[in-house]
Amino acid sequence: MNLAREGVAPGEGAGGGSRLWSDPVVGPLARELYRRCGLVFEGGQGHLFRKRVERRASEAGQSNVGEYVAALCARPDEREFERLIELLTVNETYFFREEEHFTLLIDTFWPEWQRRSPGTPVRIWSAACSTGCEPYTLGMLLREGRGRGQVEILGTDVNERVLGEAKEGSFGEFALRNTSQYYREKYFQRQPGGFRLDPAVRGMVRFQQLNLVRAAERIPPGQFHAIFCRNVLIYFDLAAKRRVIRALSQALRPGGVLLVGRSESLFNVPEAPPMGNAGGILYHRKPW
Ligand SMILES: C[S@@+](CC[C@H](N)C(=O)[O-])C[C@H]1O[C@@H](n2cnc3c(N)ncnc32)[C@H](O)[C@@H]1O
Image 1: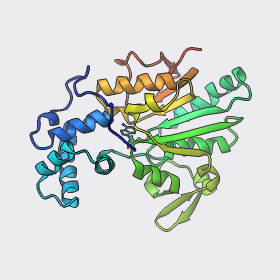
Image 2 (image 1 turned 90 degrees about the horizontal axis):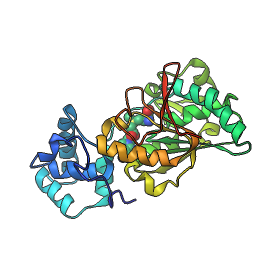
Image 3 (image 1 turned 30 degrees about the vertical axis):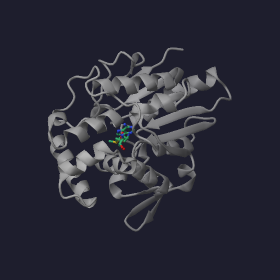
């Protein structure tokens, strides 16, 4: 994987970037990670950023963080950037998170997609899926007979480590904190330290490494009926968000739906498809 090449230019239409960027020690690295992945580390996150970079430098045998950063920026080592991204991304996720989105998709939009294009598989993309709880929740609901016909589910994330965990399908109690007894008993098997997801559900999702900032180059236009891009845009600034949303809008089919997290908003992102409101549940839908 090459995370670099063309990324987001620091300051490109952005709301000022991050204060970390002017830090003489870690600033060049913060700028480079922004360019590659669109991530900004504001406020308290700045402290966390410094601590984690220090930790990584020492793991890599460098006691001087400034020298570690300078060497990495002068001679980019892709594997090292991947390790840093694994350390610096927030991967919090759980099953049945913001469940109303799944219900809306299956009960409201699904029948319409099938009526309009009978025989075409419904294609769903969980972008920034972390350890896979989001696409697997959809898988379980579909196995319950909700949403008929053929389906293809893609889960992607920039972080290879979480994708490995997603494929493995082992989860701790915390990931099941919103999972009812019914689903626990039907789709999970207890194992030391947690639970293993039913292989039939695991088999419904294809996982692939993908950096959202570069999604436009990797995902052909008009592919998906729905895209979940939830709880990741909060880590981007406006320039990165606009770039990502432009790519996601292009990846939607006509009539396709984009769902972002409850605490995220696309009100200042003109590239977003028009917003709709279904009884208080917000979504963005590409016109037919
Ligand atoms: C907080 S988790 C959200 C997981 C899931 N969507 C949910 O709502 O439960 C955010 C995920 O976004 C991923 N991420 C961050 N920057 C990314 C980028 N540029 N491209 C793809 N994934 C990214 C992180 O690795 C992390 O797994």
